Image 1: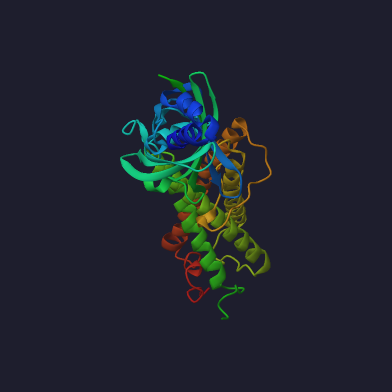
Image 2: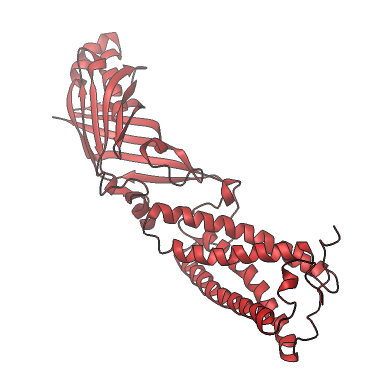
Length: 191
Length: 189
């Protein structure tokens, strides 16, 4: 997720249009702090027989650094607090926080650290990085699309799929899909 | 092959196998249900509940088969040694056992169907079992959870009575009521 944001910013900054590139880049370049206001980290897990299971994390923090010389050196860090998971159903939230899934008491943070950002279009980028949850780390990819840049605020739409079984969260498969679809809106404020 | 069906004097293998299979699953389901709601680990509890659901659907299928077989096949009469009171009450107890065997899995199915947790049912991970067409709500969920709970305790009480009666026939009255439900050949009445 974070990676995608970074990628988007980088892509937007570097390559948008040659005429404006310098302006956009200098506009977008810099360090941003992800703000919970204006941001949302949502996920969906498919269910056997159709339909899905939606949730969101209410608390997270992170930074986005857009390098004005080399997009590839841009960086995204995101920390999610699984204790803040919400599905609209209290019993499910308690289950997700328990050691059946997140084990939030012993693993209070889920972290993403980008390792590379590759521009894929005018406003899109592929962000790869390392996702750590419940003590296990695996490489993951997210797609970031720049959604807006205004004043000191930058906004990305980030999507990606994560296999939960690798992080010791395979409970409920195959009733519930192993694939977690992330859909995030990340808003960064300069500084 | 002749021992598959019942005759006027003994039970056949179909009745015997279904009887014991259902009996073992029924008692196992009671124990599993008792344990799963007291399990601390949420993960283990979740998995035990899914197993309980799988076995419940299997039980429902077997019970329907058993009832169909019972309606379509001969029922050997009780041995002549059985007294008039038991001759009158035993069929009622057996009818009640069939009612509980049906009501328990059906009430469990209703419970998962109306649950606001919306957890799908997938017996033994083989296929998705649709929910019963009942509206989901917290109130309906607690109603069916209570119904399932009371039926389970009443049902296991009835099973205990059934087991005591069978043991009484075998060890006190020394008749063939228990042994004829073990193999067709041992029913020499």
